[in-house]
Length: 174
Image (cartoon, rainbow, N blue to C red; front, side, top):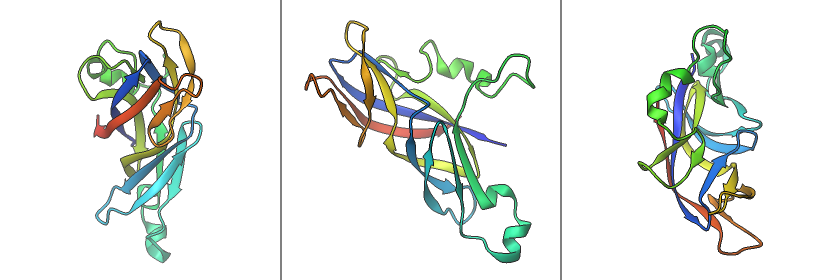
């Protein structure tokens, strides 16, 4: 059963009113195995999904253990379609998400702000290391560009003053 983790960020915005992270971009995270030994490894999400095989169990133990002990899966959580089984995992988060749309950072409201939710099986996210494409809007609400966050920073190449700097981020279990 997947466990939901929220990515909360604080950012410094210069000549940018808001940004929204894209679920179609490539992300890189450090994750920890959800077991006693706490093995740490990088996982890459491509098109919103990433898988990794833990290499710490061998032989008969590997055959006997559950999938969560052998591999990890991390994906961007999406609302379930109407008419499907149950209400979906994200519908349970209604109040914590508040009025602000998911994945949009405006620099207003309580800090840090929830910008993305991930479903994790067999792992727990520790660190957001690189990646993510942000759709930035200027102070007039016009879309500026699709900003690629390298080292948690984006600076507009045409207007050297417009920038996004992720100053801190953390994961919380939801």
